[in-house]
Length: 364
Length: 258
Image 1 (cartoon, each protein chain N blue to C red):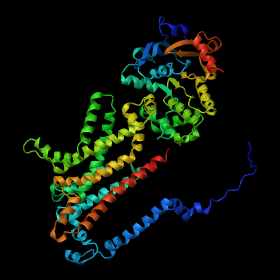
Image 2: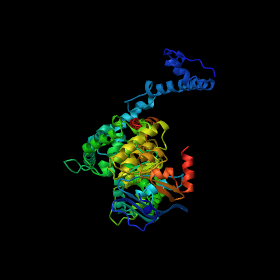
Image 3: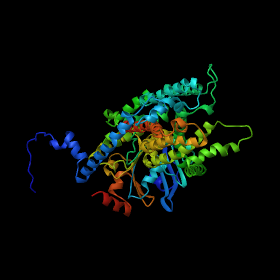
């Protein structure tokens, strides 16, 4: 053996400049080998080709507040289609002079969602706040009391409808999925079979067919004269559908739990319900945050499928504007606008899930 | 532990019996893992169970709080017979502490929360009281300063001491230890054994599956040797180590005592 023994402590040195700072970052991330360097240059070229023309179209040459005549003359984007039809796209057939009601309802909803972001705010008062808020939103939308004009749910549409279907759909589907996944793991054969059948049947059909069933087949089974609200039927279909997918994701999380966690909880005398609630689910649900959020995001976007049963959600109101001869041909602008709205919704969800993961993983 | 009782059921179990096995059999599929266990453990008795792996020693103690079900015979813990009655099982589990080879702490809870979980939800103790008690038990296992940390931040020996404290926080009548030091690095075994010895000196009823023969010699009242699902030999530690009766016991001891 031959070793050089350092008997005095060595001074602490800075890493070489090529490893840190902007130069180091570029070297490590952009020009790390010839293949990556070529990719970087190609990407830059592509961006150079695409970004300036888009910028020109969307901003420099665009018109924002003209009538459809002005749009025909403009060479850039016609954002006027949004400006001129904004209230129809957002609120659909909701009576024009009552638009403040769905607007207020949405603001309350967004406010509550935003406040609930912070987990330190989660207490029973926030729960009461949600119950009160939801009731108030219902009153605002429906009217009929407090001197508010009654608005039939057939007139609801646009963004409020999309938010309604998504927020209720997702918040109800999540607990349903958790319960189904627990049922699927149950030792009771009948319960287990029921859950497996449910999950496999629902996953075996497309959402569209469920929506058709809820709107066409389901009423056939009802006695004469009994009708169910169409929005409610679509809502239930979305909940049932999303729940089945969440159940399978949660099952993955449950299977990742070691037998030892169950045994430790049981050996303290915790019953099944407490073992699940206090020990197993907090860990299992945390593991499956990323796939769960994927499902929630896709369910949020899938609410746009309700157009096929003639509900006027955000996408449908936009399409109907485009079928107006005056605004025909400006679908790029209209769909881009809708895409931005959907993106905002999806991005906040995925952003929140990352925040949640960060907070929860700080612990262990 | 009484040798006569361990070997035959002709005598009635004593009044101060804590745990009573009466002709207990268990199978894993076709594998006959417990083959007619008869065993009485009295209050405040400390028993060490050893034997080769697969001999059924872990299964034996896991039957006491019904983490495993036995299929024949009777097990009576503190006057309650272990059957499928879930209420009775939960009652017994609350009275019987268990320490596992792999600690099985709850990684999403702080050390303090690990200790208060049982008292809060099973015993319905008020929070402040449960936390005071938890701190008391953490001091007892010399780890009070770690109360706000999470299990992942602790060493193996520390985690196992927390696991012991977690069981103690339910104020159990019996403590079961299932190879508590087998998963530990050598330098951490002593800190766990020291805590167990302190516990023994306070008069806790303990059943310990372990190969730490030093522990057996210093605090156990009786040592059982198991092989092929049977209690092959049971004796006081002095006799057991000095004068093993059975060939298989002799062989086993020669293998673990170098």
